[in-house]
Length: 212
Image 1 (cartoon, rainbow, N blue to C red):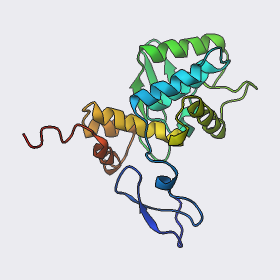
Image 2 (image 1 turned 60 degrees about the vertical axis):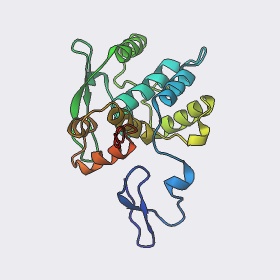
Image 3 (image 1 turned 30 degrees about the horizontal axis):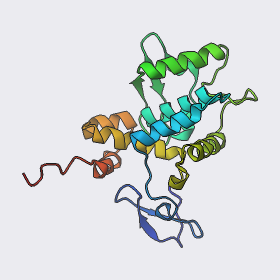
């Protein structure tokens, strides 16, 4: 969410050209981190560090990272996931978007289904997918802290990894796979295609053969 301030100077968005304002005293994203997304190898590093050796909640932590990335989930959308949103029979996930975005139904692939089945087997009576060790649903703040710890273990602390970077990483990965803008718009739940087009600037292959 953008916070408007009459004393704030407009600054370019970290991954596009959209102009945003920054409250007085708050550092710009570009001053804190070099980029707002992770590459596929970095996502894999995160998940490996989350699982770790003998980590008590490794499966939960790795699955949260995986789903947030694969389905471009905001942190609130992630922690609000309930088991009623998962259909194992049809391998589908109901994605309930916030911030006036468009909700939808996403396919679940094999590694996601395996992880979710294991989580469900361990907690057959829970309502929410992701619970804390105290038996309460994971919170936004809890996931932010969790992600910071995991990033440190993965050797990615310099990137200042935050939950929304996982959503950006999804857009980055899909556009580099050559997915068309309209499909990406629907998948990420953008009402305005302008919010999707900015990801094309990150497409590493879009200038290939430009001079041939």
